[in-house]
Length: 235
Image (tube, rainbow, N blue to C red; front, side, top):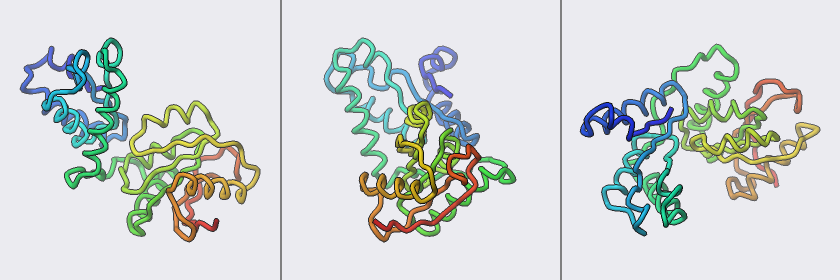
């Protein structure tokens, strides 16, 4: 879902746009869909090297509203400071996400727990929260498991290992997900070795630390996620 504030502003008064932005983001999150907020985020940076304070607040507010992504348009398409516009937006986002005002977790999405993949995602979120785990790993070629986990906005990092290049690129848009492209694994043991190497390389886990892994077995079978494992990093 795209929150295109320019179009909203045409259809209603500008005083109504901020509340509609919040409502659209909230309803989209409840349904587990991706929501992007766009239009005039850092408009002045088309010509200026720095944004206005109001624009910085606008970006921050969208993050606090729990949007999945923020999109620049004219700032990068025709602006004279495209790289700095992206860097500025990234700095604002990072600063807000570190603040006490930012609450990543929100209302549990409305999903059917009778479906096995949904039940595993719910269990993974609950277990990671109860055990205060730093990292959840989803091994998923389609990326579906990662999207389900992302709906819960867990405090834990979500790392997705996939052999599918298309899924790898698409997952870059999903909230809280770090996609990693890997080669195929012949056995579960080989896959777990890849998981450990990836997490240690990215400083997402330390030897002796517990992580939560969701995956499908047999490895390479193409089945839906059917395993949830609390795994202790060995290497």
